Length: 136
Image (tube, rainbow, N blue to C red):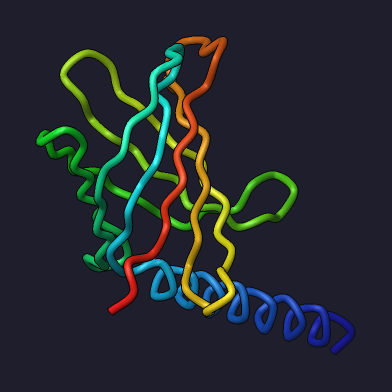
């Protein structure tokens, strides 16, 4: 009996965390204008992105200068228990990963800000990318 309360507390916490992840997954779905800077570069770019749900994953389609990249995204928990959007792009040269904070703008749409880096090599100057919602 003494283990019942901790078990119930843990299961309700796990259920709430899963529900929170599902809310964040649905919250980020939409169309975005993006502004960014690639890793290890000083140039900036403008583009367009869409985020959709596919099963338990997110599919991100990002178009910059007429070229489209498709990536998978997931809501993940950092070691400090912060929920982030982790996006993984498979590119021709090397994979690029983004770790993104999710917040809301003044109209309660998702605002996403990301660091871009190579997951397999040191990135001295990480890229930056901001996703601004295109309102329906």
